[in-house]
Amino acid sequence: MKPDKRDFDAVIVGSGPNGLAAAILMQQNGLSVLLIEGKRVIGGGLRSAELTLPGFTHDICSAIHPLAAASPFFKTLPLADHGLTYIYPELAAAHPLDNGTAAILTHSVNDTAKLLGDDGPVYKSLMRSIIKNWRLIDADVLGPLHFPKHPLALATFGLNALLPATTLAKRFKTDKGKALIGGMAAHAMQPITNVATSAIALVMMAAGHLGDWPIPKGGSNRIANALASYFTSIGGKIETNTYIKTLDQLPSAHAVLFDISPKQLLQIAGHKFSSIYKWQLERYRYGMGVYKIDWALDSAIPFKADACKLAGTVHIGNTLNEIRDAEQQTWDGHHPEKPFVLLAQQSVFDHTRAPRGKHTGWAYCHVPGGSTKNMTDNIEKQVERFAPGFRDTILARHTMDTVAMEEYNPNYIGGDINGGVIDIGQLFTRPALRYSPYKTSAKGLYICSASTPPGGGVHGMCGYYAAKRALKDIFDISVPALTSYQNT
Image (cartoon, rainbow, N blue to C red; front, side, top):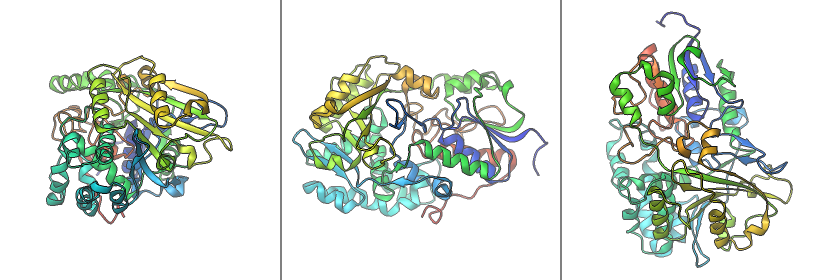
């Protein structure tokens, strides 16, 4: 039996991928759900716009989506029926080295191993069991801490995942093999010498082999639009241009789920929380920020290594040691001369992104949280280093420092796009140490943002698990576990 009648059964604040996932799951279970977005356009990190010149469509935040394609929940939704089309680059990712060669992540474990030469057997040994068991462990890897359904399969993953990436890389002999691990691990936005930084490297590589690193045709906003279209098609309601600052602004509801940071949650609902829960949220740690550039280009980026021209994503950082040093410097509050750069070239594969014959470029590097330093020259020198003549192709550029990133999305505190540090201290206790990380200390109030497990990325699993918790707590509705059958 449902509780007493209110304006809505559930209200979701924030329309990023986690807010959308939470709204969908609750609406699927027969509730009346309102999704509220502070900006004019939904999507959070899933927005696209003409930032440079007319006809050039740029992804404002997220660009390539291995975790969206691999998401156990998103794969259960008919998003293709709601306008979402993925494009698959010939190569998932490439990592150029100064000698003109590149490490390559292909769709196949065997092909990737073959291209790593002497490190091929090590790579196959590392990834074979992860790929074999992924359908058994994906919901556990992309979820809160709990006893897994397949503990042995998860343990096989975990033994490697808990290692610092620099330790895992010691198994490899070649610069290519070591650099591949380092570049993947650098997505963690922390020193790659930290414990458990291998986890993000293994997840990213597994996603490349199982679902690729796809590009949404037309822009990242197409993912948000498809999720929203499905949500409204099953009866959900969306309200935009409504920035929530106090609980009094919300309509009455039995459950409210916040796709926002702990800092914002304190501002909105801190007076409702226990002193110990408030204390934990106040101590929550945010990490590195990003400095981002979008380019309108006269031609495709002229990488020296041919493989880089065929990859949707290019990791620019040269050797493992160079990446290690750059990320450590950033963590320590400095701005490296040679930053690790994540670059995407969507228009090479999605011809809707730029006028005929022209191209877009998307890149960012990590910077200390709250940094206002202009890193344009540092980033462009890094790209030019591996693609001589790159600067001659630039028609226009648009830049965003950490302040601009937070203005774009208030969840990005200090420019931190991961919703807080995902180190061993906050991996399973984000945003607070509780039986359920999604429950606040106030009845009916939940947090479902990237500041909860499993953290940042476009996968919607934070929202899915928060909604699952709220459904059980408030409405006595049990949601079956996502199964391997659903994930096929």
